[in-house]
Image 1 (cartoon, rainbow, N blue to C red):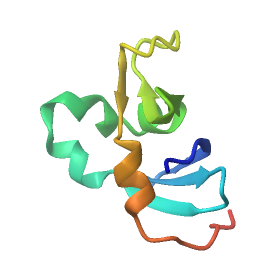
Image 2: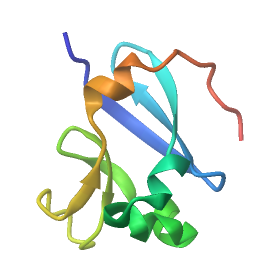
Image 3: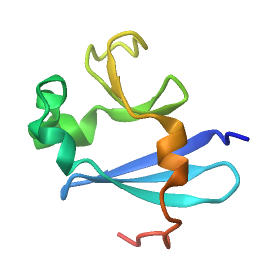
Image 4: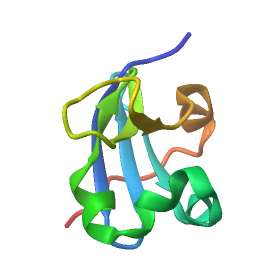
Length: 91
């Protein structure tokens, strides 16, 4: 069973806390993506922080700025859900 992602919160250390509808919280470390050509826009911390959203029912970065699901960088939701559950990060 796949649970919907209800919130994503990016941090300046290139991690994103991902909240699922069943209460699970995972911390996705996006740093390994920065060396991949397709994910090059994420190197810009302002883009990483401000374009982070939920598209295609998963963690994504809105490349076009108009919420076009075909123009985003997204992460496999099954992989995200398989990450270890973490405690909520208090800002």
